[in-house]
Length: 173
Image (cartoon, rainbow, N blue to C red; front, side, top):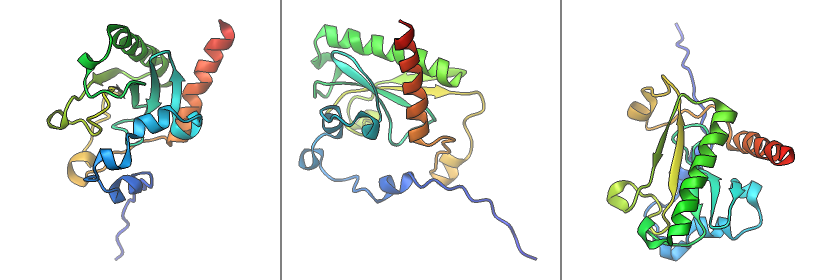
């Protein structure tokens, strides 16, 4: 009797799995700075740009639609930023909430800033705000048992959906 197993394909995780997580950020440069100074927003999943910060999709999301609000200034902590940049970051996080509500109708959100490695910062030299949409029942056994997150939509599709909503809003204004 043969057993049939369900397979969950998560090909976007391979780059993360194979990456050298111990590589010093100073040796490779800041990934946020590189993406924010590039003119390839679609390729880098930069959804929106403001005066002092931008909204970018997380390449290794906790959930579908996981956004980050990233200041253009390369600083490790919120208090290192001028008050006008801090204010724009909060306003931009609010813009991200509004965008995700329209695009994905989540039941709630997790919003956070991880400052320092001990607090979970993956890129500790460049502060950023995480905006993670949540749905009732979106937590399951996969992250616990298999160290795998189930994301139901490709980043390219999420990016296209979010930017289409922004374009629609801009054309109505």
